[in-house]
Length: 525
Image (cartoon, rainbow, N blue to C red):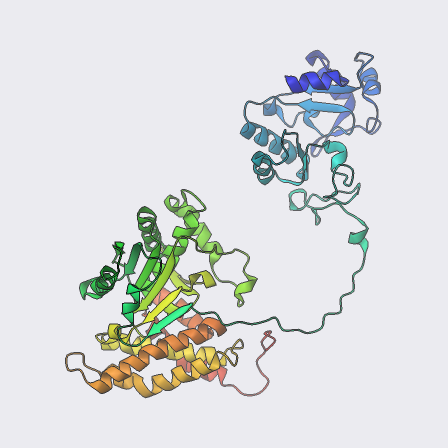
């Protein structure tokens, strides 16, 4: 009411409803978009329009106002007017106002302009309004009709009478067209490689009984442990708890101890929900690749939920997020959807098999519940802050697991060594891993934990280190088609990952061994 009174005080005339049809029939003609202004009307004065339509208006007024119902957006008087005619909609809430503005834009003006008049320009509602409205220009405390032209009330927009409406309005531009858009810009681009890097956990602890570092790990008051059932059954979780109990201050703990082989997205969501209930400051991942991968993804979702309240209860939204986060680029820096930086927890990874190298990599693999397809996620936020590579955890690993995980580690080393992204920094790790695997995998496989020997324990120790070294290499140079094939065939046929790797490995080596200039890669190195 106050706004309407002020408009009238400034020279506006509220047209009686009985005269609406007279003006509408004179001003508008029906067209494919609803209604458009008749040719002679555009740019004419309000008084001239009223006289031509047979409507009387006061001598001191020159703008015509029409109070309309938002339920009837699409009627003639709700259309673009190109003259001193304004339609007014009265609503009860800000949310209803947003919906009304968006309906008007959807009818005639998608992507164009939307204005807001508000007391304080830094009112948080301005951002809420701008985020919700499908317009390329949001004008704050300035007239829409000339504010969008630019350089009159603000220098945020270039001065122009041609305003791009972006994809909302089926335009290729979303800004004000200017001379800059009409220039041909010639670029001389000299070849310069972008700086590369090596990224690893900030700390990697190794040697037997490296687990004791948990006594000294800073910032642990609430620890959440992710493990598979074997870790619980054979007392490995108890060993972790024992180290935490030796700390000076008591540590509260919560355990998720039922990670399945080839974990699914739904299980990662369950773990994340348990984390949200417990609110840990430290996440400890204990087990083979499945436990480490499930824990990495669950920890990410828990951290993500702190910025998106309620998302952990929305399985469909989480699955949509997961689909967006899938790695689709060879270079992590090319990612469009960003992983949030962890701010609630630190992550400690303790591998109990010698294969995945997940304790030092930015990768995690999760299986889609519905399609059974395995998807790799890749981001440095999935790299643990601390890796504890303690050989004591692999002395009782079954022979089959030793074989398949060892061949997985060998594939990591092979693929990262021949990767187009390999460098002088990654190849030494790959070569040393290959050497250790060739020298120790057979002896590690033949080792009998019931009849331990020094030589067998030595081989298992070296295989454990080889797995981490291979992980360090491929974490920074990435993998090839051996893993591409294995992820897809393993998910489709339910094969253990190391077995799928082994099946494909010889064929991939033959494929890659073709000599001559017969293969190309776009990577500049």
